[in-house]
Image (cartoon, rainbow, N blue to C red; front, side):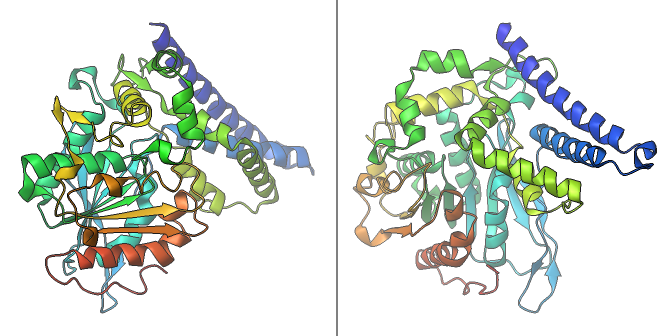
Length: 422
């Protein structure tokens, strides 16, 4: 019960800061405060605006906000989101463009379940839509899932991917980003043994921890330095009374956010200080660079306790994927069974989350796959975010990924839209 109380305490603290920000903004906006020049009120209002927005975003799922897509004739087509499969812990969604000729490239983007919503890959989706028929895994916030829905761990995640791939069929190309990279490999190997006809045509694995020990980082060092008991005692709490998932054990999003920010405390402090200054001067806008970034960065979701703990134990500590000893429902998932699915590895030279070599470790594990179906790219100067959503992705990696998809398609897909990355 104490963990439920600490969860509610965190939510109460967040709510209090949101209220303080709103109160400061409202107080400084009273007409009587404008009777004379008072810079102090301008600063108080600016602090209130930034503080209220900051703490309000932490419990709101961002919208996709996908802009219309232009066809070859210059006609705009709105993007409509449809849910193809709905499951308790995540859905398979499809970005459709009514009235637009369907693309021959069918792409499944596998989003990470690592504290942020799938909308973190919004820019990745936007960049792919002009040239592909895009689907994505839309994972749910664990605090909103009733306990009656059961558990969700790395094996369940893998089986969700298996079901999604079966639904989409064999002409699918998978792009897995960060955390789900090893599980996307496992899902493909599972299909290779159980349902070969449902395997995707290609896998593009971007910056994921296939073998965390290949090139250790702060993240992997932390995973090795703490015991599972310590993690369970310090990181796991029970959802409080406010949400539908009351009583479910989770790794809370607010606790994850605190960890994210602590890794780059000085950078975030400077960013918020500068935003308050801009707001006081009247230079801040609703959709400026700061707000666009932090509206997404601060929107966090809870992970189920079993998913978080099994990821740390089985992927990072025991290295079950790296050692090819991962099991699902008691059955060994042998990566050597993958013999026809082309695999492309993408890493960033300056990636401090999943350092170069961790993802590349997948290729030697694919003993049944010919070298002609293996590819790898190391993006010079790119960090973790840049390899799937930044300039490096748009200008260099995206064209390579589309070319890899085309090279491993059953028939020739149309050339990539040269203006799509603009």
